Image (tube, rainbow, N blue to C red; front, side):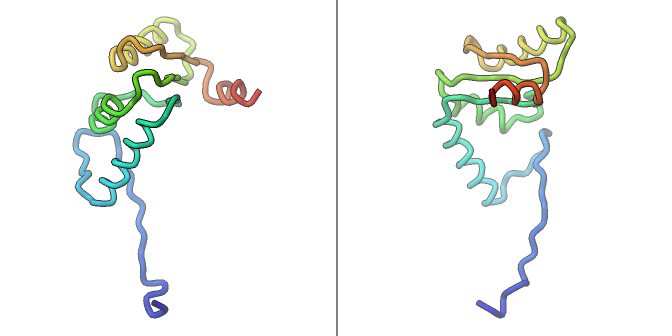
Length: 117
């Protein structure tokens, strides 16, 4: 209706990777459900600069339940220390198990440059 024009107020809302999230909002539930559907249909997942923290419990649950067993997984980070690279690999393999995971430790800019070539 025309009399309602301009009366809607939108606010930003970040859902941080912490243990104290409130996802009870019905719109969040719809978003989460749709994310699960998209994950279940994805043949490839790329994580850029994401550390998969334990505190991000809800996303970890969504990933573990909805990621296809044959989905390609790529982890992109910037890390030049070989010891730290091994820690990162172990962390992701502990979560995803024996799946084939590709790692790119030269940063997002270089990763994006390789996929555009």
